Structure formats: structure tokens, C-alpha cells
Length: 71
Image (tube, rainbow, N blue to C red):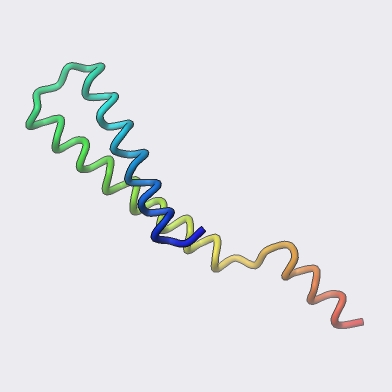
């Protein structure tokens, strides 16, 4: 998954969780918007970081191909 897609996905998940939490807890609008902003930013950040980590780590097929080329 591209980091941009992962960031958007994480932001949407953070937005939905933030809205659900604020609706359930009956939090004031100004405080709710701040909390939703924080959760949206954190979700986008985590999505991008996980996508970058996935790109940096070698996959199992890459590791297997190295062993077959050496023979």
C-alpha cells in the first residue's frame, strides 16, 4: 500500500473513532473538534509510518529469491 493511501486510511479511521467517542461521551463541540483533530492526525501518522516500514522490510519472496540465486 502506498504511504498516501495508508495515511488517508489512518486519518479516516481516526476521524470515525474520534467522532464516535465524542458522541458517546457527550463532549462539548470545541473539545470534541480538538480530540477528533488529534486522533485524525495520529491515525494518518501511524498509517504512513506503517506503510514506510512495510516498504523498508524485505518481504518473504525477496528473502527466498536470494537463496535460490546463490546456488
